Image (cartoon, rainbow, N blue to C red; front, top):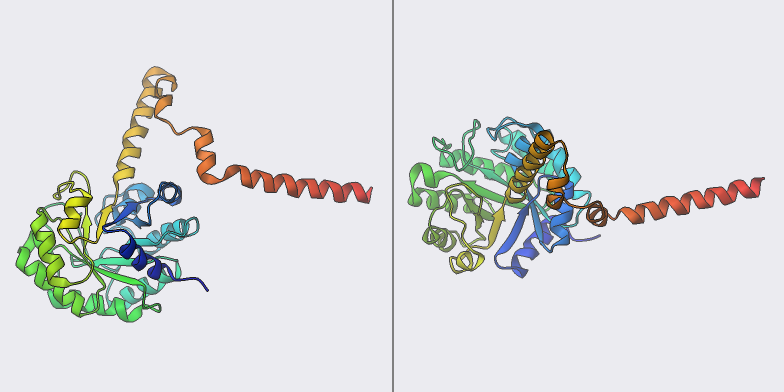
Length: 299
């Protein structure tokens, strides 16, 4: 039996420092990420809401919505997949079910946050967080539920923007004591703050390097010097896809042809290459060839 996804994720963190984690909104994105050399991929809650359901990231999607995308991604790549499960999709029993279902769907780990159930995007104002004790209970419910001890339970805290650095670090330490394997401080604005988290919690720390948010686009070198173990790019490719798609739609609509935007498109040959299309065709050819031989013998 091969190593579990959680084990592969933990190993990736030791090999690549900081580990770059590519945000993949669907299975094909994960295939491309793997082909260019990423060692881990990520499914964003915002990605599920925005891309699969056309909804804002406001806690409107369900566990089943996320699981459907997880299964699709893990079916096409061996890369470990980290999954955003928002606040856990309910109370303690629901959180336990979330962990079991995510593990069985092939995820390597999840991050669960300390916002209230009616959550907001982590880089928007007016966030509200639950008490430290309630979040500790979430973490305990999650860690108790996993069947594979290598399955990663990452605690995300949004307390920095709400209560300040000292409170956020205090929370993070409590979450680690409760069993969290890694820490995800959201909306960090200074490298010194990442360093403070890393030194205080003594477990791997993730930096969410998302565009157009509160966190500057720090380089890997900067993050490494600050003690960060993982650099996450949750929706970078998705944003680029959207911008390109909009330009193509506009060109076709306004110009009556796609000729002027062909250069922006992935070619059919490139698509087929990523998908391994020709190997599927070869299997069909062999299958039908053997069937024709059988029919010929029958005649």
